[in-house]
Image 1 (cartoon, rainbow, N blue to C red):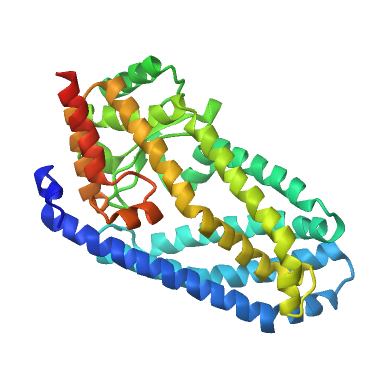
Image 2 (image 1 turned 135 degrees about the vertical axis):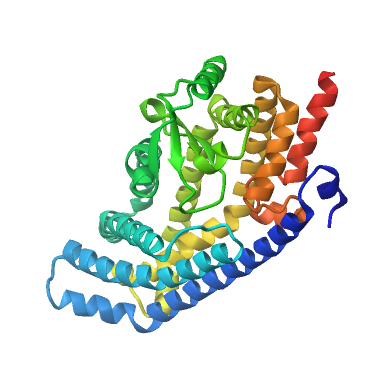
Length: 376
């Protein structure tokens, strides 16, 4: 194991466990995506056109055909993917990260599935009307997708997150005041500081600044509040404030929007010839191939996206050091978060490049310690 893990105070046993955890998660993801790819290809080859024809036997309204097909497809996809979600949940329990009961997990799975199905029903039927009838469908689809990303950023802390976690105003007035002053120094307006009830579902510590504009708020999980000092929590939120000061939220939306644009353009170029291989047209029966192409584009772009994300995170770490000016506390946080959240702190550079959206833990500790040395 990397000598720096021991030198910087990471728990060796926990980090060995984290290394095995990340390896198992990686294999799970590979199997998950390979299985979904195979199932989508099989459905495209043997089932999709039959389903489209069966639906068209009930109506000749294209939009209604698209809607019914999408509903059946979305429910089937959700049920298949739920099996992998259960597998993922079992891995989390195996490594002691998840504390969630089966009943609670089923409730969250159902809520998440309903939300995803609704999103499918809102997006796919209209999208396929555009694909069939317009040569520039990809442009309108991209604009709508970008608007949707913005909407989700705004409503997520108000409407979506409370569906899965309980939130209440933080009652620790001293900590609230400290974080408010920190936000004021950063020039970031927040509507409040909220405690997130996470312990019933996970042992992970969570500190975040969520929302856009009038919904922006500081969120601290009970698992963070119980295990971190006020100084350490301050460095966590200073990091989050760095993202807002650097406009990383808007940059991230722009990058994600650009990925969708690239995906839609590739779909526009590749869907028709890809569909012909399977004997399909460009109508709703090609939806499995549409999803494969979009997922492929995102997979190809993921290393670039992760690289940019690590750059953003490194800049936010530097901002936190300069704003809070507590390098020792920040170094402790980097160690404690890796151990508590089972992040392996010293991954192989290739693994970090491909899969890590934050710098490796040892690198984050080194940044804090270097700042401390330069400040003396």
